[in-house]
Length: 358
Image (tube, rainbow, N blue to C red; front, side, top):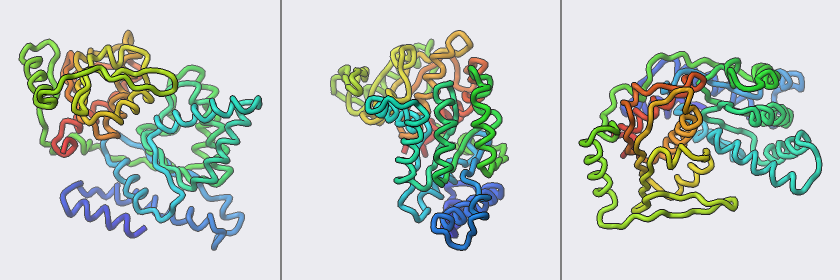
């Protein structure tokens, strides 16, 4: 794994990132974990007792914008093992639900049996599973994850996780959280839990920012958004493009030149979710989102969709032009989403930067 620290130092030397000793410490810890994990697959120098003591998961948590994803991605790229997969947690859970749905058509067995079957299928194909932005937002996912992770660990799948939350704070204040506590204890027992304790949000630091976010109520802002939109689509006519998946339709509003234009309520005020946004991202490289409201407990569902949308746009490098009731930093949050919304605001700031948009 010397190539990982070499890659990291090269990025620092090129001025692409800022060197941080705590990030280097994490690289050394994660290198040791992956090195031992690779050896354990082949029996090698470890006795059966030693292998039983080894951890199956490396869990990295910390504040937003501190380099967790960057370091995980460097490791994934450098890991010399073809049986690896890196996936955003939203996408993984969509795949889990889809697979279990198909398995239920073929079998009358209970859910635990089907999850075990699914875990065995994963373990035949994947030895290293990298999860970015690990979070749990509903009881259905929470109940599946407990059994699924137990089975993956039994099958010696090594899992690397980044999250903004310590395991003890996963699904905090969630409905029927007591049913999720066994999973939390299991993940702590099976994991090396590492706090990347850095205060600086590098997404916000030293960014050259473009003017791409506007205040909804400003007539000047509306004119500027219209000018940008005209510049992007040129003389093309827009259309409402209908895409179909899983026997349902999703409408890409005002589509032209790989660009879409939505009012907030059209994208986040209706029953949409991460899967819809992932399909949208396949067709566009820019999206206009207008009239984003301020958030509170009264519109928490819309806020959660907005958070999911920004995650998908960010992960797929989609450019965003947005108007909102308040400046991004001044937007409020529903109480139970306030921690997640810190990450969203950080990502929105980075998405303004010329580096992101280039």
